[in-house]
Image (cartoon, rainbow, N blue to C red; front, top):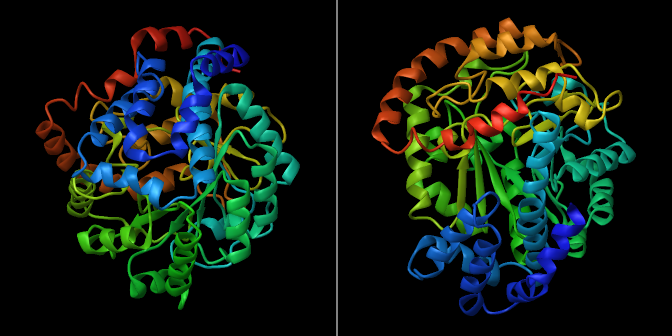
Length: 472
């Protein structure tokens, strides 16, 4: 299948459209969008995004035009071309149909992206972070990481994201993986403090690695959670990447203490000025026995982020995504292999970076076997977890669902030092879930199209076919 599709894409003008990526933005952006739309008429891969991009190009005063134009003015030509080919062509146009075919054949979810931890070690000790719960001595070998990627590509997955721990403590191995798999796009959630001139040079050389730098707010808030001097080191890393014309984004965890700052125009404008091209927002999750539940946001704070992120999409030249408040666009929860999964530094295959339970390990099961085992099949059969797509999460928004899934699958806690019972974890989220449900219902009714949007991701025909397959 892959070879036939690649040949089709090439015969349809792939080389030509890639050459457009190198040329003048204003002359060729519409051509690129039109080519993508023609190759994805059912909008299963990138067609809808291409249409959005095409409309943006036709409005040079708009924020989306400014963002797309900045990818030409601010990003190295070779890096831009490689990322376009890997992210748009390989991960989406080639990968998505292959994922769908595999999912139907085996009756399970198949991920668009795989998040994996090269190491549990970290050079920082941030308040409320669960990374230390795993212990600092766990790691996946280069061969194991390579094996995961090779398995993933057979399923149609071409996007790999590193987390941890601090993934850049394994800089050399990450670069090696970028070299071994030049057809994949690699990202990393990183604190940014280990990005130096030498590593930036390696990023320019391999061309298929993009960091998402974690930052908690301005200097006082960042240093309060991550340690004195961290903010200055992070800003220096951003300045270096901008100087080298390397794309990067930011990863923002909003808590009860920093939401008003992170959710302000002043802050997002500051990040745009530093060169960030995308911003991924996470709400604080009380995972691990050393978690700080007091950092969980109130319904008012979560609503503030809901409105702020949506407003920025119409006004700011940066791509923003809130993984909890954008459930209607993703069709609910994206974990459990539906769009992504997580493999920790011990090899445990977890449904989500925030759900530390597993019934399989990559050292004992293949990736496909893990996707077909009870825990992931629980996700597959139950998604979406709520008809209101503003309540997508099985832990934060629907804790009963997670309790039942872990119990029925016989999954175990993957916390290396201090296993956490799933009932105890869910109990920490029950009050927040009940309070948010009231706000979510009001917001859901404000958007008449919302109920139809989101549900389109769960076509009855496709679900009926995949439900026929047995659980491994």
